[in-house]
Length: 165
Ligand SMILES: [Fe+2]
Image 1 (tube, rainbow, N blue to C red):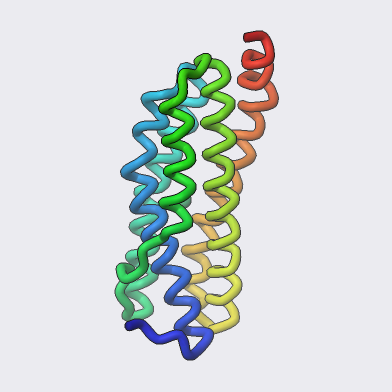
Image 2 (cartoon, protein in one colour):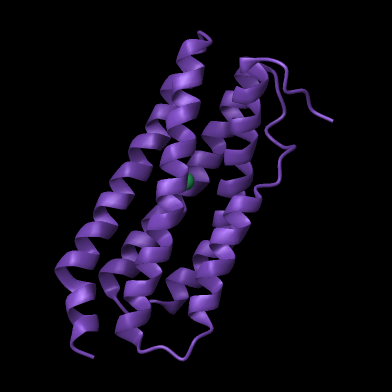
């Protein structure tokens, strides 16, 4: 069993949990792309899917720099958030309302990731892993940007359309 005896151990645990999260997301995000009717939202999900592939590579790079394995944690929180999103897609939904629901589900995931990467960047800096901190900061910025974009799409378009159903 992996150790949790030091801040370094906690940091590695956090990175492995993020690696598991991103891997699960690459598998599940295409379902969200398929299920949206909104062109802008589909583009946002597709762009973020590509970014997520890069985020996985960054975590692999970070793990290599630290001499640790990026595997080793199963992210049950993300499994739960994805399952919540899947439940929405199985409902008999009006397309406009489903789009609003998908945005809400995606933003819950983004907020979870923002929290995870926020802690990881802080711990990397604290532990003196400055290059790793920079890599993780790039991902944190992408997650925040995605969250803001989803906010805009919800507020400017999707929620208005859903209100008119
Ligand atoms: Fe991500």
